[in-house]
Length: 285
Length: 281
Image (spheres, rainbow over the protein chains, first blue to last red):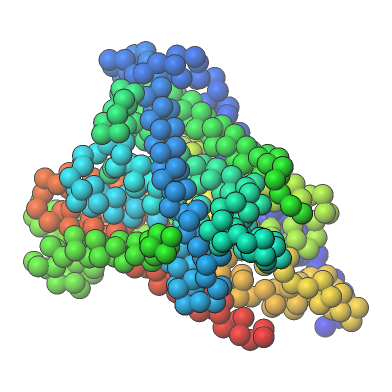
C-alpha cells in the first residue's frame, strides 16, 4: 500500500472518530440541556412541597411531593435490603471461597445473568412474588422488586473492590488470631468502605430512576405513603403519567419533574464519587 | 452466609420457575409455535400472537445497535488512543455519570426532540410518519447504550499492553494501523463482550422506548413505521391483564422470552471471553 493511501486512511478514520465523539458528547449534552431548559422554568416551590390537589392532572395546583417521598422511601428501602443481601454474599465469595471454586464461579455467573435481566422482568417477577405472598401493590412490594434489581448491581460493584484487597492484609489479620468472620467484617469492610459506599450509591441511583420494575408492584397514589403496605407514587411514573396527559401545563410539569429526577440522580452519582475518595480514614495503603 | 450466597443462583431459577409456571396457562390452550409465531393479538378473542412484538423488539434493538456499535467503539478508540490524557481523564467520569440518567428522562427527551425530527425527516425518504417509530426508538436507545459500551471498551483498550503498540509503531505502522492490527485485534473478545452488554441493556429497555416507538401491534415494514416491543407490551397492559382470561399468562410468557434471550446472550458472551482467555494463556 502506498504511503499516501495509508495516510489517507489514517485521516479518514481520524475524522470518523472525531465525528463519533462529537455525536456522543453532543447528544448527551443535548439531553441534559433539554431537560434543564424545559424543566427549570416550570419548576417552582409548590412542585416539590405539595402533593397533587384535586384536578392536578388537568392543570390545577399541587406538586409531586408524593412521588419524591415515595421514590426516596422506595429506593432507600430497596437499597437497604439489597445491601443486607449482597454484602455477606460478596464477603463470603472472597473470604470463604477460593476464586476458582465451582460455587464461586456459578454465583458470579448468576450475578452476571441477573445484572442483564431487564427491569421489566423484575417487575413481572415482583408481581408474581407479590401475589404469591398475598400482598397488594404497595411500598413493600415495590421495595422487594427494586431490591432484586439492585442486588446484582451492588454485588458486582462491591466484588470489584473486595477482590482487590491484598492477600497480605488477610494473612496479617489471621496471624493475629482473627477468625475469617472477624477478618471479613472488621478488616475487609473497613479497608473497602469507600468502594462499598460507592456501590451502594450507584445501586440507589439505579433504583430511584427505574420505572419498569415499579409499575406492577408499587402502584401509584396522590398521597404520601405512611406505611409499607400502602401504595407509593414514584418520580419516573409521575413523569410518565404527567407527560401522557393532553394538558400543556401538566406536560410542562412533567419536564420539571424530569429535571428534579435528573438532578437528584446526578447529585447521587457525584456524592458516590466524592465519598469514594473521602472515606479513606480507615484504609491501609 | 453460605445460604445467603446461594441466593443469586437460586434467584435465577426462581425467576425462571415463576415465569414458566405463570405462562403455562396460555400453553394449555395454544401451541408454543402458535403463540411465539402467531401474528394476531386480540386478547378479548383469546388470540395471543407474540410475533409482532418479538419483531418490534428485534427491529428497534438491531437498528439501535447499528448506530451505537460503531459510534461508541470509534469514540472509545479516540478517547483511549488519540485523545490527550486530560480529555480522557475527564471523559471517563462523565461517561459513567451519563450511564446513570434514568430511562424516563431519555424518553422525555425523545418525545421532545427525536420524534419531531423523525416526523420532519420522513418525507425526504418518501415516507410519512407520526414520528413515533422504530427509528425514534432506535436513536433514543442508541444514545442510552453509548455509556455502557464506551465504558467497557475503554477498559478493554486500557488492558492492551503499551509495548505491543510501541512495537507496531516502531515497525513503521501509522497510528490507525496500530489500532486496527494491534489494539482492535488484541481486544476483540472484550469488544464483543462490550457490544453484547450494550445489546442486552438495549434489548430489555422499557420506558424510554415505550414513550417514542408508537406502540402499534403490527409488524413494522420500515424504520418509519411504529413498532410495539415486548417490554412495552408488558408495561402497558398491566392494568387490564387480570380481567381477561389468559392475558396475564401471555404477558408473563413475554417476560419469560426476554429473560431467556438475555440468559442466552450472557452464556454466549461468556463463552467468547473464556475462549479468548484460554487462547491468551
